[in-house]
Length: 112
Image (cartoon, rainbow, N blue to C red; front, top):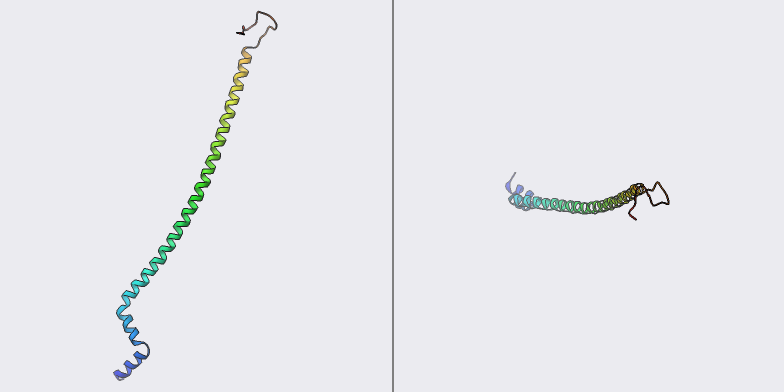
């Protein structure tokens, strides 16, 4: 075949574009690689944002649970204090219980 025929065939099939692609293929590869990395970074940023939102929601839930726990503990301590006060009053009344009623010789002697 003649070189002119080969050149004509290549030109009709987009030969100039082929030669420009051949000379610039590294630059095109870098552009594609950069766009792929940008897309990957945007996906990672979206994931990070979603995880941060989930973490914030969980923090709110944990704070609410701890608040509820502290309220329950306070309620339990208040009840324990009431029980202890009542037990003390019962023991005090047992100690002050008069075995002889209506007399001056009270046993045990009272201070009132």
